Every structure is written in structure tokens, then in C-alpha cells.
Length: 76
Image 1 (cartoon, rainbow, N blue to C red):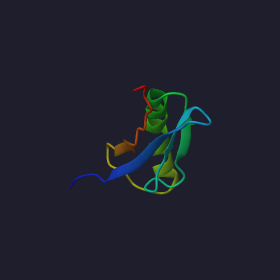
Image 2: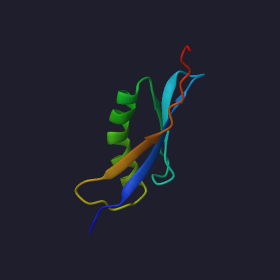
Image 3: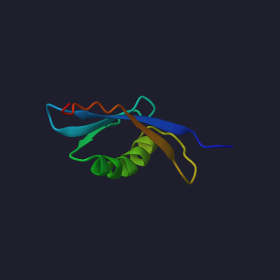
Image 4: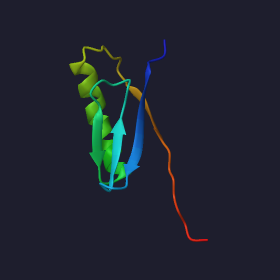
């Protein structure tokens, strides 16, 4: 049986100049970081901790997917 894949959405908060991650699948998951790489590192620790805190049993591995929409303005 395949593990559940948890969905996480990340976006760039222009006003705060940070990446923000949140999830409807992982109750309580809202975090931010200065870079996308730092955000990924935080998620690797927070997701297992929050799943355990929420009483969710997991297998040996936890699968999650980070989705994002990137919008850019570039000179013409």
C-alpha cells in the first residue's frame, strides 16, 4: 500500500520578502523562510513533528509534495 502524499503550498510573500508554506493536509503547518531551500529544510522537520502531534501514524517514510505558483515581471 502506498503512503499518503501530503500536499504543501508555498508562495513568495513580496511584502515580507519570505517564502511561506501552508497545508490543509498537515494541520498546523504554516511556516516561512528567507529562501526556498531553507523552507524545504524546515518542512523536513516540521511535517513529521506535526503529524505525530496530530496523532497521525506514519510509515517509515513520509511523502509530501510542494506546489507553488511563480509570477515574475521582467523587462521587455
